[in-house]
Image (tube, rainbow, N blue to C red; front, side, top):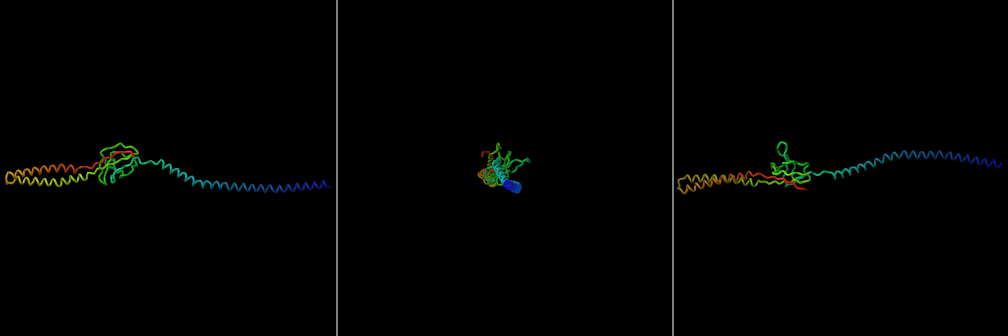
Length: 223
């Protein structure tokens, strides 16, 4: 009787244990499956959010590197032009005239080709006497010599000397032609001759000075 009761209790305990295990394992499996599904659902969201946050950073980094590269590799002007204020640089064009490049001081975007010309304060270009050999990373210096004061002096000589000499010639001729004596004729002749010499001198010197052109020169030096 005791053996039968103990076997009964053992079988009952085994049934209870098996039932508890059966109920627990599906719940645990469901819980683990739910956790796995939740992780699988959150992973794509994280992956989708990660590029969004990383993309601006990559863009900023690429902009910084591009800016650095541009700053390092930005080509400088091949040549610059230096001269006194108001002097402009010209080069010859296809039609045989002059094409303005820039007003000093300035940087030239391309290497110019001679011949060159300079102008002062918007005046007419004056061709440079020399044509230096150009090289990159150099400075083209311009020198403009104005002859305005010299030309003005020439015009003054012409304006004053010629009328005065003509007057001397006329008065000397009048004295020499008068009948006031031999001495007066000598004085009149000398006066007329002096007026003629003054006329020629004024004409020659005044013309040379009045037609004196401006001078332009260009030189190349290292920066």
